[in-house]
Image 1: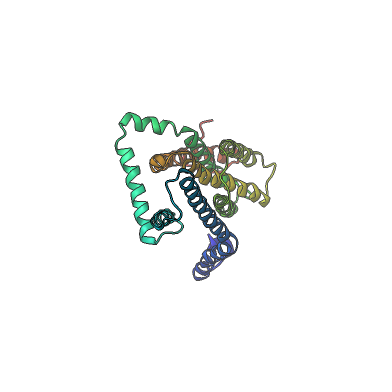
Image 2: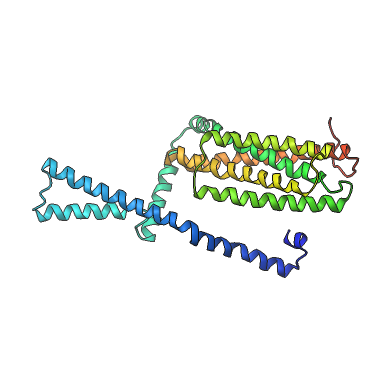
Length: 295
């Protein structure tokens, strides 16, 4: 894409591609690392509060004698154990053991579920899967069907190819930005459902643009960017909501199951995109469609 868009050589395109991860690393260290530090401070505060509550409960019940060195030593050991369990504080090898233990707990919980229980759990994920399916079906139908039939002028193959490359490049920038938003907040459920509806409106909007040419210049890249924002937003916040809403024992199963929804959306979009393209080619007097327009 870099080679076609900016007329760069292959070596130049590779050098430009290396700039992006470097820039991302700089941005993370400068703007995002503070959130990790804040999370660590919050974890420390929670541990200190828990230890203080333990002290208070022990003194009130009389079970802990602060003048007794054995009791104090035992309390310190318990506090150290609590800190050791904190994923922000323990050593890497302990962190791996905790992760393995959590994964084993999840696997055991799913293994002990019957087929009917797994089916019920899958069906209960409809509120996450429908937005994922819808947004992917709409945006990939846009890419594979509509954007291939837009060019300035539309009867020029090179112009159509140029717009297709630029629109997809702009779309990917929007996806990158919106998927990065997951580091700052988790979208509420109502917003997760609104974004696919807006994406379907984009699909209808671009279809009429490609047919009637009422907005027909490279400023269309702005709504292309907007398409990427919506698609990336539903993707990242859909899975973040699953991770937040479901218990630990069901998360891995739910995440892998929900990923089928966007795959099915892409399959539907690829098939429907062929027919959308053929209808737009017919409307614009173009040849080259693979299938015939059913309308």
